[in-house]
Amino acid sequence: MHKDAHATGAVVMIRPHRFFSNPETIADNAFQRETTSAQLGDISRNALAEFDRAVEWLRNAGVTVEAFDDTPSPEKPDAIFPNNWFSTHEDGRVVLYPMYSPTRRRERRVDIIEALRKKYRVTEIIDYSKYEEGGRFLEGTGSLVLDHPNRVAYVSLSKRSDSELVGRFCNDFEYDAVIFESASSDGRPIYHTNVMLCVGSAFALVGLDTITDASSRDKVRASLEATNKAVIELSRDQIENFAGNALELCGNNGNILILSERAAAALRPDQHAIIEKTATLLPLSLPTIEFAGGSARCMLAEIFLPPL
Image (cartoon, rainbow, N blue to C red; front, side, top):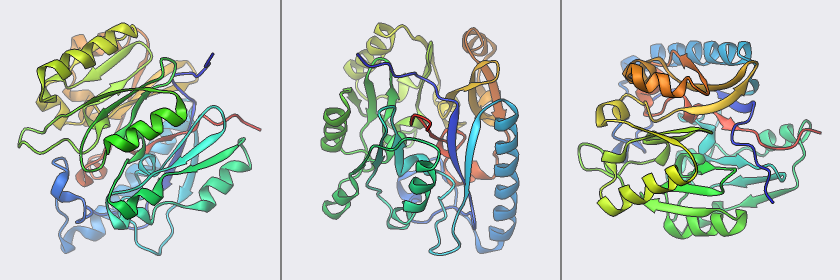
């Protein structure tokens, strides 16, 4: 029997060295905005301030934050979003993922995994990064929204989320896959599942309207309801304001839902009320970081490894 907890109280975060909107990823990320050369200095400074404040607020809420500095070279504009290149699991396994953008492949760092080994039990490294050579990608818990206790992996297919690799992950880790396709308002496939779906322990925030096929919408809803989630439907406008890009963690006083201030403001009072039955909202101020197409959840790589 699996005894996986849904929410952990520890995360990895990467303090950016030089933050800007990655030109390699903007073509398929409808949430991303271009950065001009004139903006670079201010954007990097503001992103650092937002990052440091987020770490402080998380630690004050009782979350263990293992913070690492991005290395100056090679340049990694999306280093602040580590959940795409690795995930950790309660049996001690660590997964390394194949990344769509060549610049993002530089984010995989052995030194971070070795630093975690000093505090947590790492039993095995599962390396899927070799699939990059064949042009197949699966970008961690951006692609995979995992319901750990119920062993369900939700995946919206895109060029960053390959169905064959979803199958490989699910076989290796004994998850059932719920696979579907979703699209932004401009018709582009949604690049990561975790911008349109957040699965909490007792609720799910989901942009059902973004799912392109009616039978798939029914399948996703049925799976969430079968695992006793209160389904909170998000509008397209709420999705575009990152309301789906949230993550439930354990804090000092129970579960907390981490999201951005922009996302929290986009939620209706009745939606807040459903969440607050089981989790306290912790909105983070991330306006500059969201400029690059990711929000609060993208900044957090959960640590499920057993402590030493």
